[in-house]
Amino acid sequence: MNIREATNEDFDQIWPIFHEIATAGETYAYPRDITKEHARQVWMDTPRKTFVLEEHGQILGTYYLKTNHPGPGDHVCNCGYMVSSTARGRGLATAMCQHSQTIARQLGYKAMQFNFVASSNQSAVRLWTKHGFATVGTLPRAFHHPTLGYIDALVMYKWLET
Amino acid sequence: MNIREATNEDFDQIWPIFHEIATAGETYAYPRDITKEHARQVWMDTPRKTFVLEEHGQILGTYYLKTNHPGPGDHVCNCGYMVSSTARGRGLATAMCQHSQTIARQLGYKAMQFNFVASSNQSAVRLWTKHGFATVGTLPRAFHHPTLGYIDALVMYKWLET
Image (cartoon, rainbow over all chains, first blue to last red; front, top):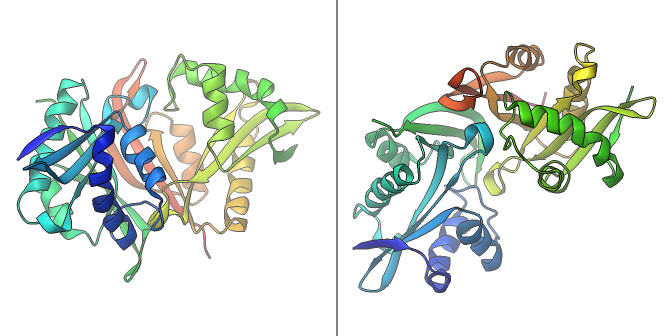
């Protein structure tokens, strides 16, 4: 298992992972009918850095890292992680979360924030909590889940400096 | 006092207000050295709508409205308000906040969220609270204030439907 910065060519392998997760509409705030080009823009072009997790040349996971707010907020970064449905339960999200914190510290960020975690996504909430993220906000009915309706979204946050 | 949608030509009057507030670095998450063209992009181009508050042909305040998160979050909007330092204490922020809620309902939004309110900005916190916004999150030390250092930022939220 290897985590490295993504290249433009990687997006052909990232897109099926992204597409499956966006289409489901259960975890990420992307349009469910997002196009490949729009996805490339939000996942590859807009972030400060994008990484892939690969095994035997196959991309199984990916994450981006970006500054959450400019100016007075630019010491706080934001990340998003995606794991292929074929590779869940193997600790890939954990590996990427730890990797992203190392990168964030290297880039000089002091904190990491997740802006919009669906409260129904209990495995993610459990995982981030285990990795030191606190739930610092609850956005009432801010996430429109395809089967659960309007559910709360959580804001999670971790100060990275020791 | 009249609130109307902004035109491109209005930006020459918006810019001094924006510039003063961004340069101070005490309330908004914009780079303190933001250029006029970058400011135009974030205030006029990126938002869904931008409004100005004018009196006798002079712009005294402005606000934007945009979708806070796409897809499963696209029923929640985000607004930002700016009032000229020459016109503070006259209820202009209140007028714009009320106007923005009306527009938000017209556009079909169900809630409004402020993502990054400096906790030191007590007049804003008091005002939004008075207008029905709840503090639903506290981001520890997420706002780097020029004189106060790292202070908390607040997430404020209001469900608009009655």
